[in-house]
Image 1 (cartoon, rainbow, N blue to C red):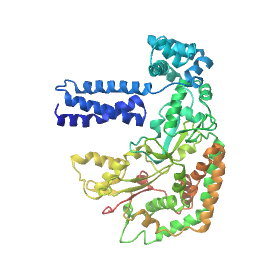
Image 2: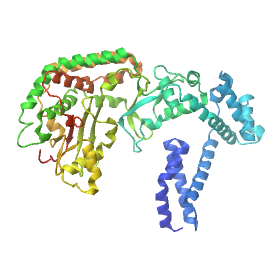
Image 3: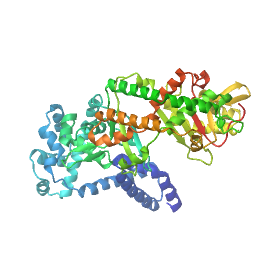
Image 4: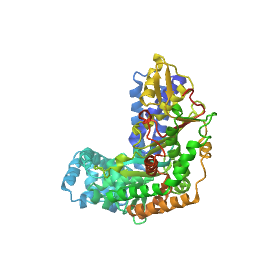
Length: 546
């Protein structure tokens, strides 16, 4: 083939080759190495061949052959020397689960003749690998490769059956989060902990470090499986190996099932919201009469010039930032872990429970997100959102926010007109009540728009009194002392950081709004505002009209 065709073909198959490599190795570094080898081999072959009838099959055959050579070279360079720590030996000699043992023995019968001989000689007759190599007249590397391949085939033989029974038991991670920065491939925590067994190993070593054998006994899973998952967790920074040959989780896990804890915490939030009520009352009154917020040279838009609607967003926005007295981001940076894919973050997860621990979990929708558009020259948008039971937004739709608010920006700037081509865009804006139709030719924007920067808006608020800062610090200490009892000692430093700036958290803000409503400082929002309350879009233009 000519060079141009070969170049275009390689470019077209790069992602597929990398996907094939990642599927085979399940390891980023090895996948990159393998994909580079396959790409080189495919390119060299394309330059030599004259005609290809099936390009997909042709590339796949080369990829498969290179992968086989890759495995052979990799395995031949390794040796298995520590028989005492071999996980399959443990399963065969110490596992009391007859069903698992019988399944392992059954799978041995499906191995090739040479692999059966090696497994029997090594595991049952307890011969050393170098002696087996001599008796079978094979290189030691070949014996090692056959043994590892045999173990893999045995495990694969009953993996599906094991998973079927295992999936009905044990814990499941929920709300896995990466507090920090993902690597260039954007592989988040859920990519690395997508198996229940992996999650259960992480959880089992959370409160108390455990060895491979201890984990095998506790989870009732063959040690060979445990060993594989531990290596996976270790390589990617989610597990730490201690000097005692035990392992400890490096994930911040929330597994608090105590109802009294949640009730007590909510009571604390309510009490401290009352302690700062007088300050917030003055703040709300000041905002409602402050000409900087309501003047003829507008930099803040509120639909129909609704002061009450604006106050809702301004109060929650101010509380979310002004009550952050400590630099949590700087502190937590000390505990970020560098991942193999160049991610740099603290891993965190909740344990999923079948029962609703507290109606509080439905009462609050604690979701706050500031969205920064990647195309600042086209869509200069930052979005403040605060979701609670006061609004009727679907927080599961937040991943669609970028496109939705880009469409709103286009509407404000007059880039989309009413015509059949734009009907879908208008429907989305209407459904989310970001624009309201007053008549056939009259739509108005139904959310707060601000042409000030976040910093400029915050500068319009009065300074925080020292007594409020003292109340906030006192609350942080109270929450930390309550929380730390539920976390292992190695997580107390992180627990302390996560307990900081509690006065700015979403639950406190809900109680703040309730208190202000109760005392008639703010009024209930209107029905048509229920989807857009507590939203502020920071941008460079304001809507025209009402």
